[in-house]
Amino acid sequence: MEQEDTMSESDTSQIQAFSPGKLARREKIAEARERHRIEYEAITTVRNCLACGEEFRSEGAHHRLCSRCRSRR
Image (cartoon, rainbow, N blue to C red; front, side):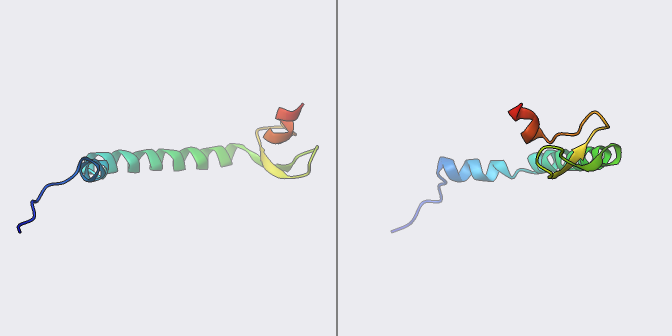
């Protein structure tokens, strides 16, 4: 009884998901996200929310409520 060397469609799709082109694109996207995060942290300040007191990244003096408290109002 010989077993055939065939791959199911799900096996093939998993291999294609890790192709070198996709890995390179994912790495490039990850690097861009990291650059964006660093830039964002450079232009923002950590403040405490005036409503709940939790720390959040503030974009300036006009930004004193965290996203959660801002969406409640």
